Length: 129
Image (cartoon, rainbow, N blue to C red; front, side, top):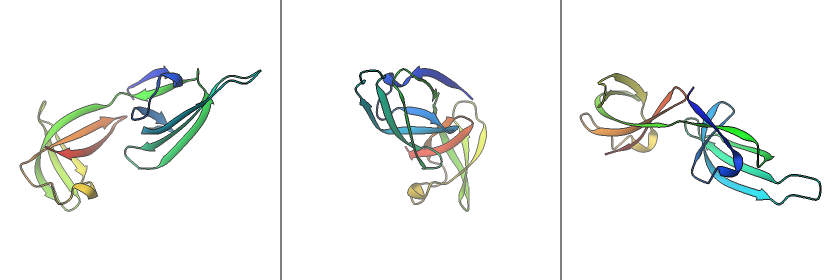
């Protein structure tokens, strides 16, 4: 697992965070002002990149959290077998079998290049080139 540790107050909407062991994209982040005897709190909502589940946490703003190191790569589609796509990475020429995303089903054909991401040991096709 390649992660980095940061404080919640440095995060922004659109960035990534590890919640429940899954890489998630932050959809909303609100902070409340500190009370007389308390610290400021942050309410964070995020959607999982790979499983599309909503997750939320409420923590003090100085709490340290993990953020995933996301590697964006380019691959060429070698073949399509049902709902799986066989890709060849354009940098190191590894072949990978990834599930085909529903929203890209009609756009992916053999021979085209696609962008995919690698985070926390999981991979997902993001878009076609």
